[in-house]
Amino acid sequence: MQPAFPKITKIAYEGKSSRNPLAFKHYNPDEIVEGKTMREHLRFAVVYWHTFRGTGSDPFGPGTAVRPWDDGSNSVSNAQQRARVAFEFIEKLGAPFYCWHDRDVAPEGKNLRETNKNFDAVAKVLKAEQKRTGIKLLWGTANLFSNPRFMHGAGTSCNADAFVFAAAQIKKALEVTHELGGAGYTFWGGREGYMTLLNTDMKRELEHLAKLLHLAVDYKKQIGFNGQFYIEPKPKEPTKHQYDSDAAACLNFLREYDLLPHFKLNIETNHATLAGHTMQHELEVAGGAGALGSIDANTGDELLGWDTDQFPTSFYLTTYTMLVILKYGGLTTGGVNFDAKVRRESFEPVDLFHAHIGGMDAFARGLKIAAAIRADGRLAEFVKNRYASWDSGIGAKIESGKTTLKALEAYMLKQGEVTPNVSGRQEFLENLINEYL
Ligand code: XUL
Ligand code: CO
Image 1 (cartoon, rainbow, N blue to C red):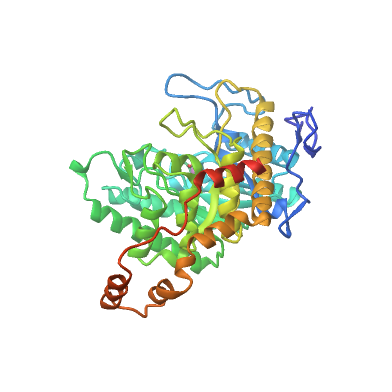
Image 2 (cartoon, protein in one colour):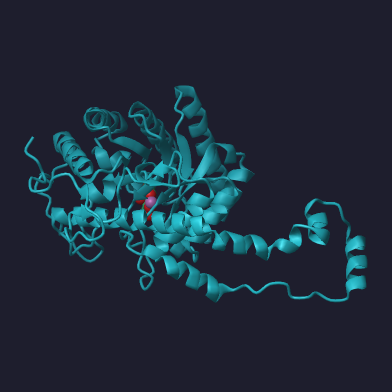
C-alpha cells in the first residue's frame, strides 16, 4: 500500500522549546509521572468515527474533507483500505489505542447477515493491523442511533423488532470486540430517551433498556469477554432528553436495575457541559461511586449550545480532569479517548495530526501540572483541614453513628451557637492552581 501520509514520519517528543508543529512539546511517552509512564497514565485513543469517517458535513452543507485514500464508495474493499490508513495514522501519531462503532469500520449490507459478513471482513484487517503495530482496541461499541430503524430508540424503542435488531447488533459487536482483544465496551444511548413525553411510557422504556443491558452482561460472561462495560452519559442531542443524562442519573439507573457491579462510566467533557456540569463534577460523581472508568476527552465551545466535539487545548480543563483522575487512582481499563473532530474548515489530512498532537500535549501538560499540585500538597491539605471539625469531638461522634438527635440538641443547647471555623479561600486556591499553569 502507498502511504497515505507520505510526508509525515513518526511524531517525536521534542520538548517545549520546539517550534515543529508535527512534534510533541509535552507528551513524552516514557517520562515517569507519579511512578508510571505518561503512556500508561493517559492511554490515548483515536476514534474511528470522526477521524476516519468524518467528512466535515454539517446540517447546512456537505463534507469538505480531502481524504485521498478514500474512494467514497460503501464497498468492503474501501473499508479495508481505510482500516490500513487508520493504522498508518495511529502508528505515526504514537497513540496506543483506538475505538470504533461497528458501522464506522464496515458498511451495512442489505440485511443483518450480510452486514455481519462485511464486519468480519474488515475486522480481519483490523486484527492484522493491530498485530503488525501493537495498537490495541480501547473499546468497541454498536451504532444504535444512525439507521432509521432506530428512529424511536433501540433498547427503548416502542418497536420490539428494533430492540431485537439492537440486541443482535450488540451481540456481534461484543464478539468482534472480544476477538480483537478490546479492553472495554461502551454503551452510549444516543436515542435512548424521548422527544416528547406525550407519546412516551418512560417507566416501560427504562425497564427495556435495563433488560438489554442485562442480556449484554449475560452474553459477555458466556463468551468469556473480560473487558470493562461503560455507559457514556449525555443529556440531549439527538433526543430532547436522554435517559443517561449525567453521571448521577446513570448511577441511579444502574443501581435501580442491579447493573452497577457490571458497569463504569465513560465521561465526556462536552456532554458534561450540555448537562450543565463541569467535567470535574462528572468525574467526581463517578469517582465517588467507584465507577470512574474512561473519558472521552473532546470539549465544546461554551458559546455554542451543542456537542461540537473539539479537541481539548485548555490546560485548566486538562489539569482539573487529571487532578480528579489521579485522585481516584488513575485510568486502569479506560483511557483518554479523543471523541473529537477537526473543524469543517480544517480539511487537509495534516490537520488530523495537528489536532491529535495538540490534544495529547494538552493532556500531558495537565497530567504534569496535576502531579505537581499533588506533590506540593497544599491543596489536599487545605481540603483535609477544612473538614477538621469532623475528625474529633462531636463531628467524629456523628460520623461513627454514635449519637442521637437528643444528644445533638443537648450539645447545642449548651454551646448556644455555631462559630465559623474556616474560610472557603476560593481565591487563594485559584491563585494556587495558577502558580502551576
Ligand atoms: C456522541 C458520542 C458517541 C459515543 C460513542 O455524542 O459521544 O460518539 O462516544 O457512541
Ligand atoms: Co463520546
